[in-house]
Length: 465
Image (cartoon, rainbow, N blue to C red):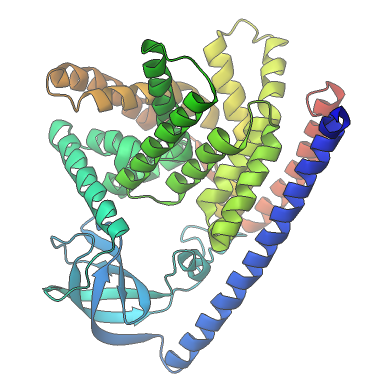
C-alpha cells in the first residue's frame, strides 16, 4: 500500500493533472477562437460598406461607470450586443440603469503604439472580446430611460458592493487632496481611474505603473491581511486546530476575499488574485512546487476565459513577473549575499532581489510591447515599494473617524515623499529610453542569450531543480 504514495507516483499524478488541464485549455481556446470568428463574420456583413454606423438605441449599463479626464466610459448591453461606450458628456449614471444613446457605433481595430513603431500590435478586438464586447459606441447624447429589465440576484449584490465602493472612494476624495487621493484610493479600491494622464505618464517613466493601481501585488497584500486577521481571531479565541476548523477558516477567508472582489468591481487583476488565492487555500499544499502551482492557475484561468489569458497584456506582465520572482529571486539574493553588497539589511536585499527577479521576464516583454525602458527601475522600486504598504495601511485607517485626522497627516507625509521621489527620478537624464524597432530586435536577441546564460549559471549553483 505504501508504494501508492511514493514521490514518483505523486509526480505522475501531477503530470496527468497538468496534461488534462492543458488539453481542456487548448480545446476551450480553439472554441473561443471559432466563436470569435463567427461573430466577426456576422459583423462583416453589417459593416461591409462603412466603418461606422450612426445609431440610437437603449442599453442597460452592465459595468461600473468610470469618469476620468472629463470622459465617461462603461459597458452597455442592448439588442443582443455588448458595447464599450464612451462619451464626452459626463452624467450621473450607475450600474443597472437604462439609457437612450445617440452616437456612432464602430468595430475595434488592432492598435499600435502612438509614440514609436513597435514590434507589438495591440489586439484590441480580441482584448474586448474576453468580456464579450465586440462593438465601440461613441455616444454624442445620453438620456435616462425609465423602462429597464430587473437585475438578477447576483447583479443586485454587485450593485450593492459598487455603491459601497463609490461611498468609500468619495471619502478618500474628500479627505485627501489630488493627486494623493487618486493614489490612496487607487491602491486600495479604485484602480487608476482617478489619476490624471500626466501623473500616470510620470509613474510610467520610472517603472512604477504597477504601484498606482490595484495590481496583483497590492491585492496580494490585502489578501494576506485578510488571512492574517482570521488567523489572529482564531488564535485569540483559542480554537484548537483540526480539519473542520481549518475548513471553516478557509471558507470565511474565501467569503471575505470574494466580498473584496465585489467591492472593487472586479477587473482582470482582481479576478486573477482571487483565483490564485483560491488555489493556494484550497487546491495546493504548502510544499507544492511554485512553478507547477502557477502553471496550473494559468491553465485554469485559460479554461475559464481563454481570451483573458491570450490577449490581456496585464495578465502577461503578471505571469512574467511571477515566474521571474519564483525562478530567480533566490539566485539574486545569494549573489548579493556573496558580493560586496553583503552589508545590506535584509529588507533592502529582499527588495533588490525581488525587483531584479521580476524584471528578468518583464524587461523583454516591455521592450517588445512598448519599445521603451526605464533605466532607473531599480532605484525607483527600492525607494517607493517599502512605502506602499504604509500608504495602504494608513489609507485604510483614515476611514475611521476617531483616528482619521492623525492617519491622514501621517499618510500625507508618506505620499508627498513618494511623489517627490517620482518627480525627481522622472527628471533624471536618460531615465526613460525609447528604442527603434531594429534596436528592439537586437536587444531581445542579446537578452535571450543572457537569460540562457543565467539559467546555466543558476543550474551550476543548484538553484534550479
